[in-house]
Amino acid sequence: MTDQAAEVDRRVAELLTRVDPRTTDAEVFLGEQFDAGLAYVDYPLGKGGLGFPAGLQRRVDDQLDAAGAHRAFLRNPLGVGMLPLTLLRHGSDEQQQRYLRPAFIGEEIWCQLFSEPGAGSDLAGLSTRAVRDGAEWVVNGQKIWTSLAHRATWGMLLARTNPGLPKHDGITYFVVNMRQPGIDVRPLKQLNGQSDFNEVFLDDVRVPDTDRIDAVGKGWAVARTTLSSERAALSGAGTGAANIGGSAVERLVELAVTNGRWHDPVARAQIVDLVVESTLIRLTNQRSRAALRAGRSVGAEGAATKVGAGLHNRRLQGAFLDIAGPAAMSWDDQAGQSRRIASGYLRAQANTIEGGASNVLRDVLAERVLGMPRDPGELPRSTPWKDIPRR
Image (cartoon, rainbow, N blue to C red):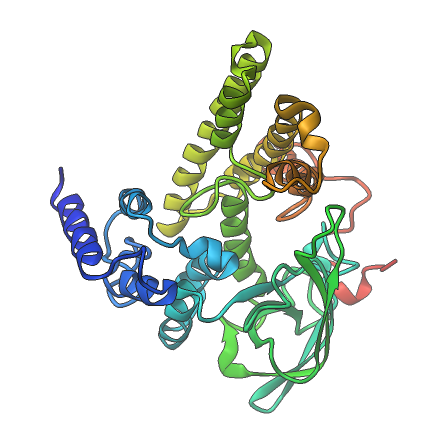
């Protein structure tokens, strides 16, 4: 055991002795975890970390899980899974001090204002405008597929600040207060009856320049960091859930053992394949996340894993239907298990769209990994955004 691993174990033991996670309010416990440097162990002291290798975070999480501790990611997926690395790499010290801790403890919920009705797969084509007005920016536009916007305190916003530049170059990244006048949040009803997503209308919303992340026009570079974190989170990396939409593969094993399907060799082979896939995705994402935190680019690797993870979770939730049999068709069972299976299957269909549509990510892989030519019908990358035809 290294000295750093021993120090991590000591701090975890001290935390659990001082604060019992089973009887302590979640925000209080998570605040103690953050202050002990056990939120993101590779982050600097005072910002939720200890300056240790990122791999030791798993050591922390495993011990806290065993003690029944609260998972920060599950309380605030975007504020814990996507915001921290963005702030660490692009935000000011003041912004890091202001936002990291409240996001980790779940005091302030975050959402992501990226996709638009005309800029989903082609995110860089976004048209929401931010116009400078003294020490503030005035924002007008519409966003869609915004998770948790109905609960969020803050949003990560991409807006176009210079339409005369190429589409990737005229974008700026902001933090926007979601509780202010001019923001209208409207829930979207999903196939499974839930409303995880929203459309958001911004009408003369004012954002202080102090809430701009990085330089004017550098928003695409900042967004790439956020998107890399999002793809890792959606694929099960870091301290997040094993999958987004439906139940984890461990639940599938439990279900098969309980209802006897584990003794069917065909069903068992299907489950084993899914366990192997899930493990490979988790390990690849841990490596990607460590590389991101070290400042290295993992664009192509992240895209490959996101494509694989989306398809994997759709297969996984389909396997739940196969293993559960007719019981999975009951939507209103008292135990709730059948409802979770059916709802999870329907929700998982979004996994190949959210966080980067699979067809777009395949284009990324074709161009950046395989060296294939771009679509001959595409305009040159130097074309100003204002000159690009819009449908």
